[in-house]
Length: 398
Image (cartoon, rainbow, N blue to C red; front, side, top):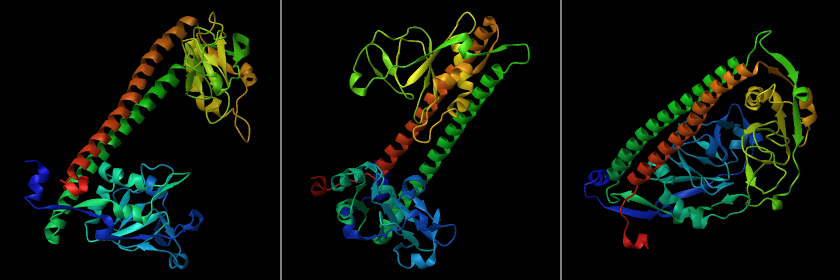
């Protein structure tokens, strides 16, 4: 006998449409400029994606009383459901409003009032089985949305429907377990995130320390004096197709394009324009450049990998070199006068060996910890959905 069966203790479970066991009230429109620092609590639909979770007893935003009087509100114990967004994945998410006062809701939200435990409803609204039910009722476009009729058709499990007191007790116990699991998952996620942040800070500290030179330890030369700067060749997206060499363009993305004008060996690439203007990357395979330029130092004086670490240390400074009010861009010409330290080659090799090790550790953590966080989130969602998976009748399954 599993936990859910023990909890139900033989009690029946009935799946009923949300519209049958509760009522939906759509909010009225207000805009972000209507929100003030003090006043009556309000929830803008965009905040449902960035601020609100399973339940809330305080609002992030407020609205003045005179405007609030013209709008619609959710009461204590209602579930606020977001009904519009740029993607369909989060549509239908709910937050149980447990605040002492009413809260004004945006017209892209509904308040759902029922005799069910509101946090139980809120948890169910995030399950895969609920999301699958409402998909067919979501209209897609620039903004995806669902109406009250579509939400009303989705069915929700109600344990022991003929005994409201016992039903609420079962719902409350499920909420207690999920609240505990939610808190543990959030705590673990916070710990892993803090660990990743600390390791990145540690890596940056040792990198910056290794690349700080006292007077006489290194000469300072311009890139124009000790290297060659080459501009990429413009190509269109239609010209990119599966081939032998990655096309390095504006930022950390690459397609494949066969062309004999690539340069082999080590290459430092600077993205030229857009949001990634100034992004420094290092390549040790043949590449083809477009909307970017490459830097090739004289290796008799300056190691390519050492120069990469120097420029990466200056990443913020290089990014701030971008110009242009519309699409920001950095100019290859500006890098001809860019000064970099040039210690002896033996010292460069020693520093590169140290930083390669630190970089490998940092990369491993940067990939491993986020993956661990994602796995914990999937585990949480699995057990949440499992705890809310009640037996269905043949009619509901059909």
